[in-house]
Length: 89
Ligand SMILES: [Zn+2]
Image (tube, rainbow, N blue to C red; front, side, top):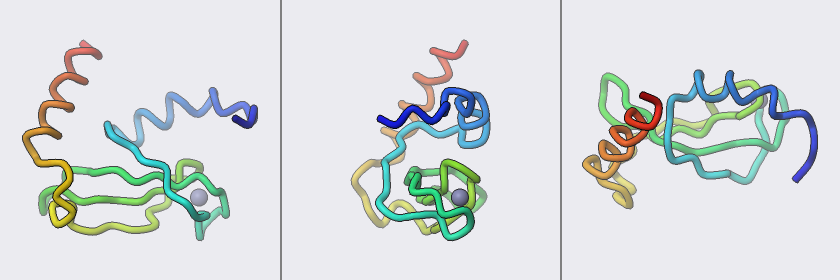
């Protein structure tokens, strides 16, 4: 674990992503070059999408319909979101 002072990013990160299950992705950001990509689902107008975003500058690297992967169903995601709401009050 590199000590790069990333604790200062926590608030921004939480507010910007509002997401729950993030998975580290190999590769580097085409915008800023940081090797801090993460993949997670987001809910938008068209339904669930899986996005890959840079955790440094929040550039979107990839975005595609999520349900085709099928490893987590919508009910499961909804339960995660619900429990998160409870935790945050
Ligand atoms: Zn970036």
